[in-house]
Image (cartoon, rainbow, N blue to C red; front, side):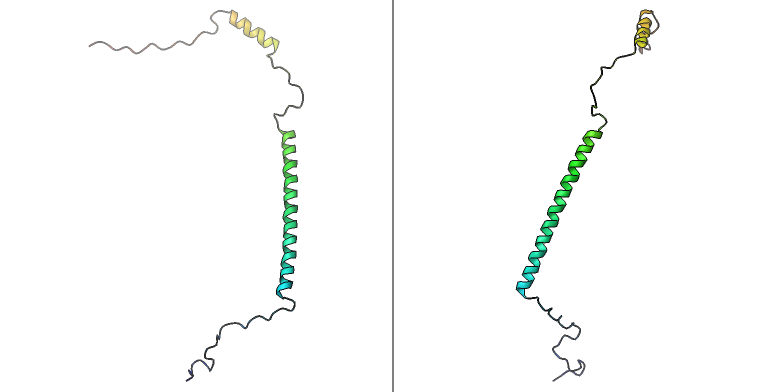
Length: 113
């Protein structure tokens, strides 16, 4: 006996959309060919990205090596104090009492009880 509330559509999905029509030319073989082509293109794109990344990394390494501030651009010259400074320091050391060791405060003393 049919339910009068279902509108005579017993056993059918009322809210479901009808199945999509199959596109022409979508046989399993044609789909496999399309997927193989897509995989080839994806592999080529990944390879290109890898090559570009390696080139950018190499260029950055060369640039960093050449622009590093501590990178010696020529021969290093020995460092020394100016002659006038050395003379003044020697003269000051020869004068007694100009610079002396710091004086320590007297030690704490306790009284005997």
